[in-house]
Length: 182
Image 1: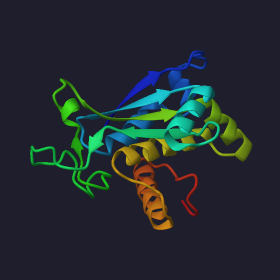
Image 2: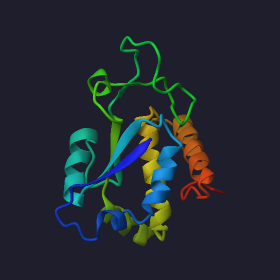
Image 3: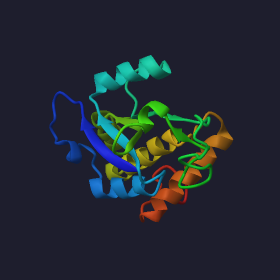
């Protein structure tokens, strides 16, 4: 998948790439190993109040969260027969197709958005003693996997998703900051 960076913060200090804490090249390489090469994922940066609103509106959560993912893919064949991503290939959990409304566009198909709150993430990392670059890499992989159909509603799914995250991160020489022994 191709990453595109969208900065929706009012106060754009630090600059978007610096706000990510991890080098853009690393994040792009991580996403590049997932999903079809012609699918695009927008990485959208928001401030904490914006993330609080999104978290409340879409998850019923209280306060900001680190990452939210919005997939624009469908898991039922819209009629063209061949899935854009097959379950088990390049991180896809399910057979997935681009939304027919997106598929007609020129250029890469927008597969989804990963919304990040860099202020919240860096504060939490500082408080927890976590390396922010590793956390940001994990959140991008985590968001991409959600777009590719992964969920973590129960313990088995959480463990499976964490194993997939660890494998993707390991492929770029990075540890999974939350996995024991990673």
